[in-house]
Image (cartoon, rainbow, N blue to C red; front, side, top):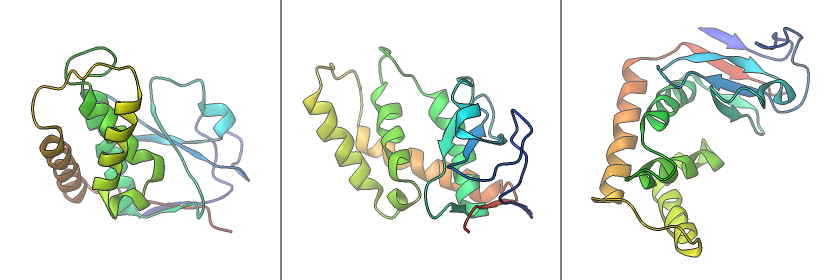
Length: 157
């Protein structure tokens, strides 16, 4: 298993990552990790899904595998002003507090509903959002178990 730690090279500038909150880059068109970079290097790379690490700066192989599948699934869903965009938005709320949000994903679902009610956005989802949210998470977790990436990221001091 590959272990990424401090002093690994940034995928963009090729300098060592020594401090800060490293950003993981994910491909959006296929389930794969592209690399890891400094926060200041990655902010311009919109074609990649980005996950900024937060304390305690550790993600296991299972968590990385989940994120690889998650970003691929997230970017395959409609967004913007398209019909059924709410599933993408709902799943994206889960990322705000990942990995702790997986302990109770329904809290993220309810948070999305509360935020949506406060905004001026029209509801465009046709179907059962809760069932589709849970089904998507189950499919992501199953794909992550079947296709482990074999990478562990440990930026703890």
